[in-house]
Length: 156
Image 1 (cartoon, rainbow, N blue to C red):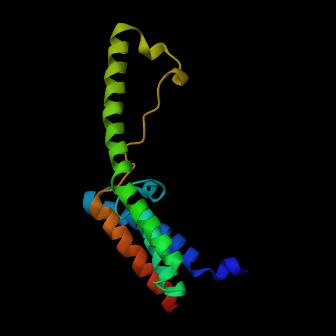
Image 2: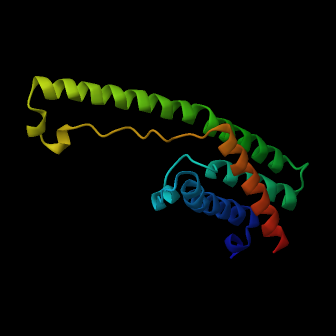
Image 3: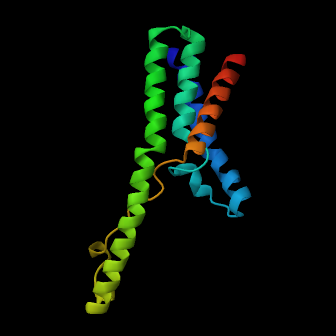
């Protein structure tokens, strides 16, 4: 039963759900495209990674104290996650775009040289996921979302 009263856990999980679900209307307003699949994808506005770690860290700060060692650990963990979300993962996504373009160009070459359409599906390569990381603004708003959600949990 302690699991159900673990406010930092529930604040972080709620921040993930909120950030993933709110991507749908934000995308709709920005592009007029309704994409419910965004709720289950990586990348986009806001960053659910940032929302989760910000909610977790804020909740730990509220419950354990902002001077506690566990808050310090969580804070450093959050900084690393947010940096990774906007840096390493974003660059990996950009590289995936280039690699997918190279694969498509190569496939076109093979198609012209051989009869590519007669090959079985299992012989064709699957594209790499390109939307891996976040822009800094997405990380920022994910973090803000997480902090607000954590404070709301403690008000309830």
